[in-house]
Every structure is written in structure tokens, then in C-alpha cells.
Length: 252
Length: 168
Image (cartoon, rainbow over all chains, first blue to last red; front, side):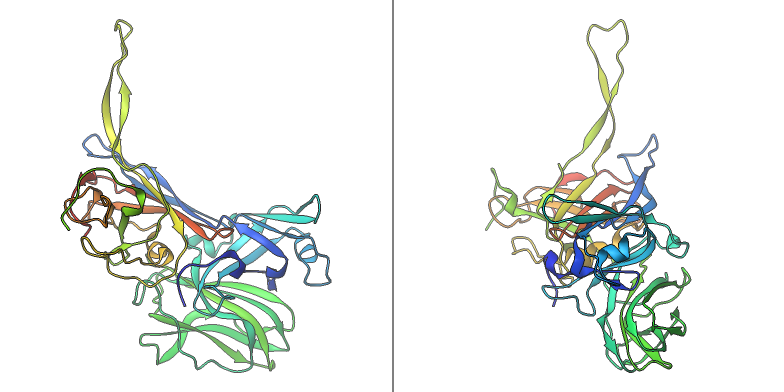
């Protein structure tokens, strides 16, 4: 399904937590290049080139909730650097294949207010992580919607907007909300959506997912990424892992 | 139906822009900035002048649009007089924001019916390696699921102009 949608189908993942049930708004989901004006005497019209990029997920606004472990107050009241994924479902909860906004950002505050229900706000900084600083782009594709997996993927994958392979790299983002041992999350790519192989570098490595975690793994800026992508998981000692994974592909 | 003249309303406006492969697409919009060339006014008044005077310097024609965020698959830009066929705003804008390849971009003003050849068009209807627009901003408001985007001209580009031809 594709087309237009509404905000009730937005989901927010932060540092291995699904905070959608506590969040009311996030944004604006900024992706802007400073236009550097380049004009010479002889030019017919003013022109500009895109200079530094600004990627900023804005402010997360939610309800104050001190539920143990997963409540927004428990998660966000300590200001920290967080990996953020915002998934936007197509008139339903986000399914694999929908667009996601991803990156690693510093949370800059945690403030409570309210006349009536008590709400909290958590504004985020511009992208700061060293791996994402080489990638001026936050929009990618959700490869695995939040859910449990107990074995390797043999599914078909997802196409991209350019309709072909790209040679400008990208980065892999994951949030694991539950698990019972070690496993490796990764990305497969394919030229034909039938024969898949591992996308070099797009792997979490073996991690004990008994503890909630999130990660962002950047490929080289010149890496070839074939047309179709799908999630992959290799179980170690784990028998089940519950996670969200995404890949942000660069087009230039 | 032949091209019409006279007044019109915004529901007949069609916005076209190249995708990352250089193919013209039409994305859904519900806002658009003022369209047209605006010249930088250079004040050249001397103390001795009785009245302020100026000359027009370089013109500029940035274009900002907004509309519903949409993931519909890319489709061909509908022909003259045809019902618009929309491509998803995310589908088209995600790959081109921040790129350095000039894009064709044109705003088609249909006159009380779907635009057709002979009715006003502003922009650069055919891009080249030196002429066209660049996308420099693509931002989503997740509260109402709308987007906004901004386009500026590629340095050294020919000036966009008013014409009557369809984007190609």
C-alpha cells in the first residue's frame, strides 16, 4: 500500500525502545541544505549550490509516564545521545517497506509541563554521530517492522525510488527491544529480488540481545548497494529477537 | 478543448519536477510560493538626486512548495489537457534533495480546466547539465503528515521564464 497517511500511523523508536505509546508528536523532521549563493556578473539569474546539510528530528512531545523500564519518563529523563527511527505507516501501523527517518542525535533537554495531563518534551540536536556526519540524508526504508524473528529471512525485498542499484553507500539502523541471547542483524541486497546476498558492512556483528540496544552502522560512501534490500538475522545463542531495522540509501 | 484565456483558480495548477533519473513527475501540492522572477533592486541614488533611483540587478526565482506527504509510485507526467497523474511526493523528492544535477521544474497554470499547451507555464521546462533547479530542502511535519520543499536555481543557469510548453 502506498499513498497519503495520517499521524496515528507514525511510530518512534529511540535507543532500543518503542516510545510510540507515549509520544504525541515529533518533528518537524528537518532535512535541509544551506543554499550557498553563487552568482557571477554574467549570470542570467541568481543561483545556489547545496552546502552543509541540516538533519534534525525536532522535538519529541509525549506524555509523562513513569512505567518501569519502558515509560517515557524512565527513558528520556536522563539526557543522552540516542539513535532515533521514525517510521511512517501507510494508513496502518508501519510495515516493512515504508519510509523511515533515521539518525543519531543528542537529546538536549527533558522538560515537563501541563495544565491537565502532564506532558514532556525532548528536543534533539542536529545529527552529531561521526558515522552519520558523512551521510547528509535521514530518509530510508523500513526493512523489518517491530516484531520477533526466530530464523533467517527468505523473504523478497524492497525496491528503492531510483529503480536501480546505487554506488554511494548508506547506513544500517536497528533497535532491538527484546531477545534471549546472541544474534547478528544485517542487510541483504539483490539485483533481481530473488537472489540475495549479504550487503558488505551492513551488519551489527554478533551481539547479546538479552539487553535492549540500538545501533547505526555506516557503509563506505562509495559502497555499491544493489536495487532490492531485505533484513537478515543469524541466530547465535538466541532463539528469538524482537527488533526494527532500516537502511538509509544514498542516491548521490 | 482548445487552450483558454482569462482568469483561473488554483485547482488547475500543476507542478512538475524531474525525478533523480531526469523524468518529469507531478507531485501533490497544496501550497506554492509566489512564482516568477524577482529582480534585486540596486539603489543608485546620489545625494544630488531629487528622487531615489535604482536599477534591476540579478533576478531570482526560488520556489517553495508544500502538500500532503505521499508514497505513491512514480508515474508519467500527464499530457496536455489530461487529468493530472500524481507521483508520491516522498517518492520523487527523497532522491533529489541535496543533489547537484539540474532539474526541470515548471508550474503549469490551467485556465479553468486541466492545463493544456498554450496556457501559462513558468519555470525551466527542459533541464540540461547547466540549466535547471536544485532541491535544497525536504522537511516533514509528522503532526499533519505534510511536507515542504524548496528549490533554487543551479548557478549559471538560464533564467526560468514564462512560456506555454509542457515540462519535458
